[in-house]
Image (cartoon, rainbow, N blue to C red; front, side, top):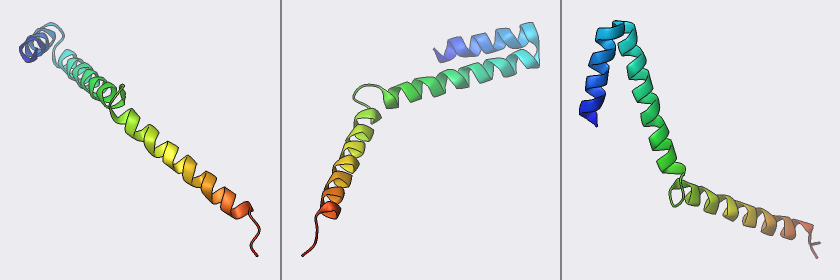
Length: 73
């Protein structure tokens, strides 16, 4: 795949000059960021960890709210 990217980069540079090469680099970088983001947030990835933390925080807030609403004697 890296060879295909390099070939495309070379073709764009020959076809459009330096501006085409810069556009190609931005597209490859954007694709890389999208793949990494999808991998982190997909099922079984980072999303489960974030979901677990949010559920723990909600549970702790519920316990704190119950303790605060009980009158002290």
